[in-house]
Length: 118
Image (cartoon, rainbow, N blue to C red; front, side):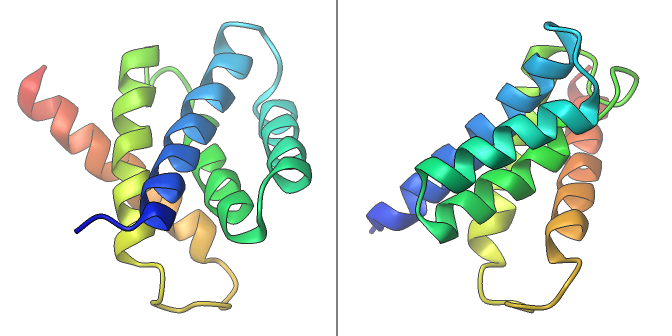
């Protein structure tokens, strides 16, 4: 049913987006610094595949507050990016630009969901 590596990938993506958003908007660091902190920590502490998912999701957390206005919206985007990463893991593997494209697509989906319910 659920594979352990997919659950870990989802969790890393979720926390990568949320922590980056929090560092940027609640702690007051720039988006680049927040992304860098999360990316370096993921690279040092996690296996390469999980670090890549975390770093990709961190791009989502770099969104401005007019895009993802609350921590809850960042959490929703973290869920979406986790799902998108899992569903597209083997599509264009190794091709440059997949992380940013995945993050942008996930943010657009999240904003669409938020527009329906809020």
